[in-house]
Image (cartoon, rainbow, N blue to C red; front, side):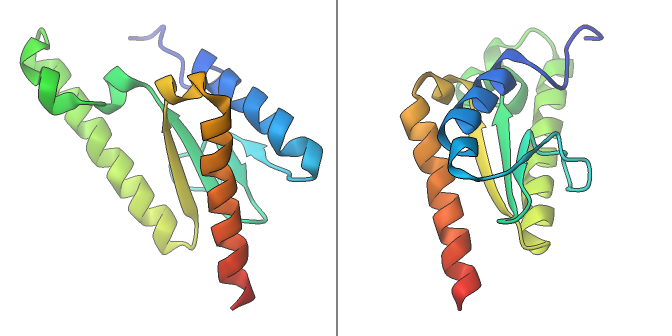
Amino acid sequence: MSRIRNRDTNPEKKLLAIVKERFFKKGFRYRRNYKNAKGKPDIAFLKDKIAIFVDGAFWHGYRYKKWIHELPKKYWQGKILRNIGRDRETNHALKEAGWRVVRLWEHELKNPSKVAEKIYKAIKASHGQKRR
């Protein structure tokens, strides 16, 4: 457990490459592991108040209900359920503070175009909301 990193992971590096290629070059500025937002988003577009997280399938419970019985110990079940709960709390707190939250699964990073589209939709929605 102590060897598991919480920043600069391979999925985070892939996300960063997508953001640099598709958004930074177009003038969108971001912060990595932004400490002033709940949950320390992997990428945060401060101007648009968009928090982006990339979650590991095992640690954050992708299809958890399907493979709960395959987990070796009760410890892992509790750990993953706590992570799922913490993710929900983080989403709620950020939304209450006026942020848009984009959660990506690490396997989604295999398709950079879809990832970029999700982020672009959040930015577009953020801009539409500010105009009102």
